[in-house]
Image 1 (cartoon, rainbow, N blue to C red):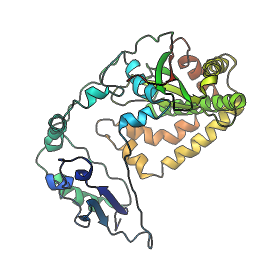
Image 2: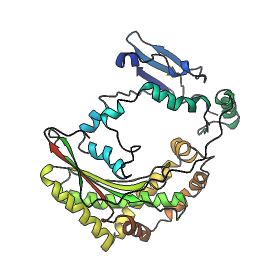
Image 3: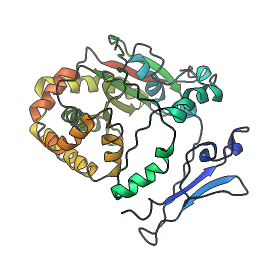
Image 4: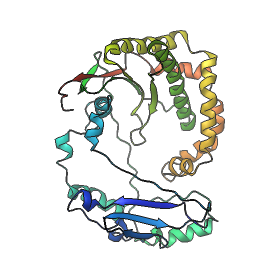
Length: 368
């Protein structure tokens, strides 16, 4: 049985010190859910708020975590060579759907705190709640803890089992989408987005294991080629991205930063190497070099509370396939074969369906 919760030492700068007029109370003071009685909540004279909870395991050790937000979302995007790509690409990939990507500055700042409250308050007051507990705790203790807190709330609404929205992916433009960035930035960004849909032909865990291994194989090849041509200072990242709420809105991405004078070279090298992987195939060595670390990481996942709590039990009542996925995770991952990765490359990394994005430096970048 767990005797103490994970060490918690949180320091939060009072919002009143940053945004005048916002409430300075703790969230639980405005909620009907009682906080952990063992936590001490207080505020220093300078406005620094903190929460302390004693924890004797492991002994003689404390954990400190400081979260500092420096600059706005737009400042962070504008200081990143790929900022306009990261904010624009999701919307382009959904045919201009404004639910995706980063909104225009004026639109975002026209929203009010009252609108936010009207949107989220009903869910917190009477919306359905699914609770999952993972960790070194016995069933009786966990049941009592939930019964005396969340379980003591008034009856909640039934869960709305709506079908996921279908987002149509438009035909990719043959031309590259170009966005401007500050000329003070030393590099520019180059990105490729491949749509992935119609993937309901295999069990979820095996399917996503295949895609995640596939991203590793592609990144390994591209990373090696880019460093051979451009030097060790350059790297390529490849990711498979999926959105649970939009099951057909999945894609592979490849991104790299490069000196402006070599941007045209990288924009030729990536497609050429993708073509070579599809036509000539990946080697057995490339496959194994990527698969073994991939399997090791997935074994580590099985020993973490984050995997079981966030991935498996996050919404297990609505998505019971997550339980089957966890059961089959090891065997499904081990069973992935070289030929399957090659087939994935040939099916999805099609240069006629890819969305291309680049950034260029300008003295006065346009508003994105």
